Amino acid sequence: MAAKRKTAGELAVAQIIEQMSEIGVEPDAKEAALLSLAREVIDHIAVLQGIIESEGRMQVTRTGVTRVHPALVEHRQQ
Image (tube, rainbow, N blue to C red; front, side, top):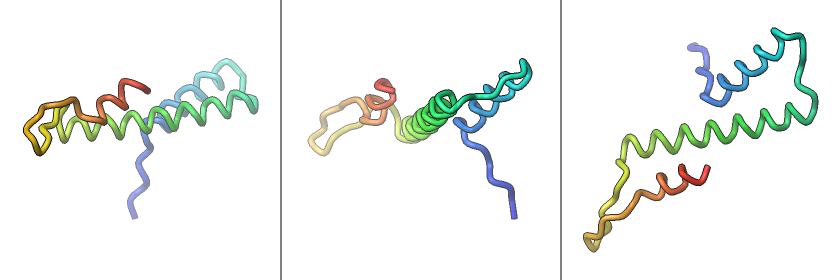
């Protein structure tokens, strides 16, 4: 069975924890909570980027109106 690939958020958090470890510190409870939130946001952004890459930045509605893809709007708000 193939090993599970780490998400962008997991990689970013692992890098931060590694850098902290190099200077001899570990995240406390508050920092761990913030790192968990950061992981979630980074992973959410990565999903949105994938949608935008596959579907494009713009959409054409059934009535022929061109508009910004909702995923792009959400991405900007992150």
